[in-house]
Length: 490
Image (cartoon, rainbow, N blue to C red; front, side, top):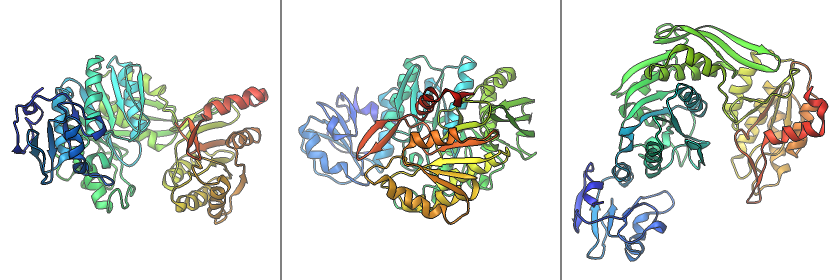
């Protein structure tokens, strides 16, 4: 491939060398440079790739893309751009021959609901024979292949590579989580989404290495809607106007409010024999009854999002209805069928905001008792421990404090911090450091009609202790507990 092909959609200045030079690979990691690579210098928060130019030239790079003035040996082509992250995105799209033009792309942004909604959408589209890939917080799914994720949204090069792999695998669509950081750092630049989705917005990801304030956070989220053809929005959000600012897409809204394009009416909570969910009627652009076996009002919003997307694909209502009944998402309000006496579920809630939202939603099902088991990660902000402890003590009837990923801290030190928060309210509590024993305690002491939430681990299948990840999946722990105590399955 010629370098000229890679930069055909870029604004750039040719500082030295030949634009028609042949390129073997496009690289942004200096360790992966080989003969005739084009190396994109990204100025990171920890390292500046411009410092590695002598090394990559020595390793065989024939072109470097920079955003600073640099001195480079003769014979190496130097291209200067204003923003090398954005340049990487456009070059990656060209490198993989613009795969987004050959597959329907759906991007979902918002503070909460992204993960659940992506799986819900994939499940429904797959059931309608629209073969769909997924890129998100938990994993990337390409056909039968599952690749664990490091970030909610990967670097632009990997986004384009996954798109290419999906096209080559014969997929029809891809649904992906789009984080505010991804939009800020141009990880999804270089193409236009067919559909952009806004779920909701709450103060989050604000801090030194993320967004300086809520306004910047909201602005970054809004960028998706200057980069998609069709926009689907939570019309009930108080921040809708801010998200719509500068949008260039067609707008469709959903929610409880009657002025939305899709409206949830006659919402009921489903509660029977250890199962929880929601039922409602959708009106407006669609007209049918919906049942979702995932509890909480957020399940109404998530399913409305999925219905909006399905309408874009012209999927028959009966297909949507059937698919929504069977949707489950690993680690997101995931009900584990154990007994009809009580409800046991696993959820990823690992900060005070998400835990409060979850417990508030479950309270509406009027359980005999609401039992919340959780721990907190080591080497993370202590404030999270105090806050989660206080929230659980206020909202749950019983809090069971255990270990999460202690990392390099002592589990009891973390538990004692959580207890500081727990004691600010008046909820009953138990302290059981071993997570399996803590779960066993909850199951052995469950009362008819209880809802038991195992919070914090969600989809994770490991526990990190002293730098080592040990396999630990809560579903397997529950199965082991039942195997050891068969009466718990009655």
